[in-house]
Image (cartoon, rainbow, N blue to C red):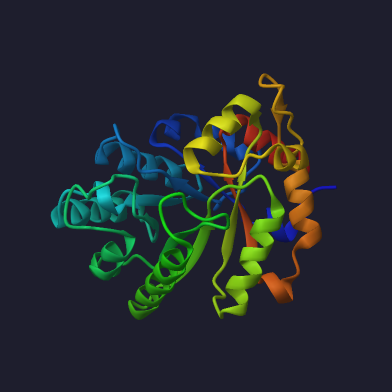
Length: 277
């Protein structure tokens, strides 16, 4: 069993700026126009990120650069980054996150501050993505997460832009489906891109899960198809996507698609998608 066209169609994938030199690997499993998110990591320059967006566009995909609010040192830095993305890569979509710094490096406390600045809309950004956390956030209370999502969606709509939500990755379909159903019941109908790990080793998956606060109980990992005693083994998201496929009900869960985190590398994820597409 594999993900039906409604899930795999228009799936997106995440890369780092360093991955820009390996985009040919994506073509194995991802169609032209696929949204390719470009992370905002420490140690990269704005020139690196803009060059990555340019290469993604040249490769026939849709660049979706991340903007990390707390890592921006000034309004001018945000202005220059967005203008550079638009000029070099015709970017119309961005994904805005707060960032993981304990204190902001500049004037932007969180993603909402970036959205409310008006800079994105001024430069013609048409779609703005925000983060969703089906299993919660290790540093933010659930009520605060809910309020922040509402505020960000309201600000995006007020600017005349479209919004979507991409979730933290998960190993378990149950909290994702429950969270999606709750969102829809509360009137939030934006497209949700469900974060799933690409094929990777157990050791790699556990490292990223620990870093991101994702549940890794023995029961959950067994459902995913992993053994915590087999650190050198590999696993793909087959069982997770089978569970999502079986559990998703459009009338309850709305428009849901996949967003791949290629922890094991672009090539492995693209090949996995190609075999199941």
